[in-house]
Length: 338
Image 1: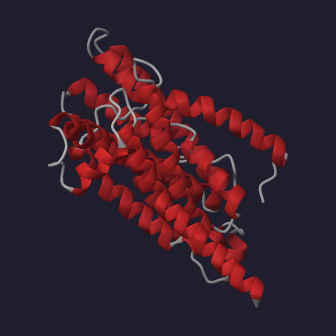
Image 2: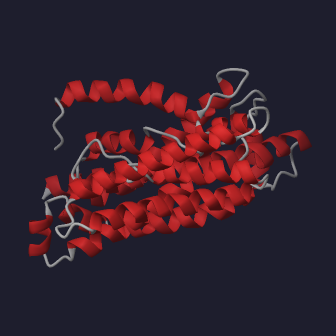
Image 3: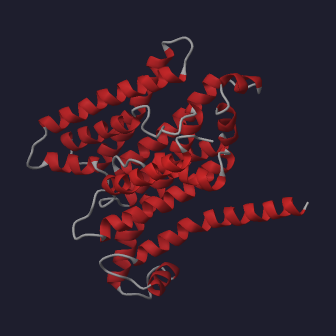
């Protein structure tokens, strides 16, 4: 009885910690930068709608750091929950949000938008659209096989990823090397420097709705992770359920790529971190991945904009930090996933 009470108490504290960490990290990010701001001024600006602080402080907080911080939280949370869902349904620890070609498809859509137009909104819409198209094409190829195996789905995703990666190269080849090409290349490396509230209005509802669906299906991901035969014994329609989860994770990842570019390692690494501390139960793992992923990418973004005089692309930092950590994780686990 006492053990159960202690377990409930520990679970409650963990849930509370995961809930308050993102706002705390966001508050800290508003203070840090080349123009340091005291935390008292940040709290005063937010609490009084900025009337009690200087105009320049209000401008830095509300026009630059707040939309960027919110975007980092959204993208980190979205990529992490999608990665955790994909790892669960594919029963593979090396799976990430881009396994079915969504990142390459969205990257091509954004590159095409940047090539043909000056509108960021058009680029975001094309990125989201082509990310979804890439996954739909991969699923269509996989459905041509009657047994609908996971291997067929993964191989189809690899094919579509290769096709859209080639199309990205084609767009860069025909782009103007003086004006368009640098913009396309820099965007593909990932970053949040140009994010504003209009971008958040576009991406936030998509990420929120897709993540909510994944959270609602989290216990069914546990069932799918046991294998198709076990899932059918529970009365689940494995094909419908799998594609519902893939569809939700796809729209989340597409919106994240449209907002921040291609940011690697977050959706692969963060679910492993959450799993180390909280175990493989997706009922806990998915909410934890959202919180940890949001804080992780926000911290990475703060480093990206403050470490040097020129902003560092997010994908460089996530790879430099993620790859060594993942290598250490492999040495600790021996490649086993439990």
